[in-house]
Length: 475
Image (cartoon, rainbow, N blue to C red; front, top):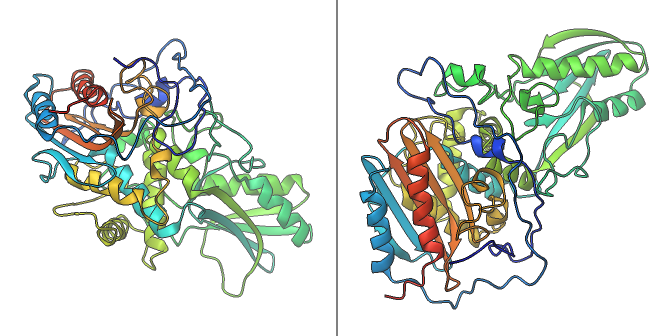
């Protein structure tokens, strides 16, 4: 049996991850009561542990634990593992599984893998693949300020992770040693540029969110999820993802009812410190004939995707999907975001038969995706011009994000990168795992029909994935 991993084996270069507390991150996909036809009156709060989880860092050294020449497991053996998962009493009325060779895309085992089910947060994987491929990993969400006389308009560009002060520009890292997308750019950075371009004096400021017509809170999302802090409004601009100051990206937090206005108020406060006499107008479209006086670049899309995949952030994933629609020349609505995502995946060769999307985050229980589509997206991204880095943005089992605690000290620890998903009665996991022989397998498990609670179905899925990791399975 494999012990604690010593190398991050799913990437072509060594990734070093530090120890940290990921209880919050693990809780990101443990949100019972979400999107039932009649929401539970008192949703269970996020799971909290009293102390940080002990996470081992990969030891330095060469990465060579997988090989394209390693033997492919016996289809019969993998099919037997899938059948055992379905038969497990901890799983629900419908358990569908799809496993493919990650290198070739060839099917290894399918248990109704072409049948669509509720994908929950594994939907974020599809959003990530489409956005990376269409926009590129270096794409940035830019926030600008334009001027018309004494009127300054803050123009939303999709960055929900601004800070009220100066941004860190990629110099700040999280507990895993990764650059934080949150706080990459700041309102004070805009203030510096405004002060250099505009004479100090009376100004009127407004915020333009017209590129993001809404709904700011998707109709497919339950209202109590907003009040509980599981998701926030999507208006094209926010400070700290619309959370109160000090709440990290990996944690739940009460959300701003008007995130765009909070960003505008932050700009007003910054300008007042610089000597401007500020009148706040509120939301308004930028007048014609303006000149740009300030621009800040948010985190590169690769960092944004990494953050919303690791922490399963619904708000940022939804915003990313809408920016994808906007840059396709369409209104940034949920419907257009879904259409562009589907079109991009199809162009990449992914079979999207039966796919239905109502949001880019997977918070909707009306979404329908087949396990084969999720695996197809993983396989297609591997050789795609812009999405090839996808695997490095998925959290590493036993070490990072929502799969840190689930696979700690497990056979798949360090040999798995995966995206979790859960809604009431729904448990999902999709990713890539390395077998004991060194073969990479892409897999997707979609389970529904369970009762309240995630612990038992998650444990069953984890046993299936750990069995794949231990698989010599040569027939």
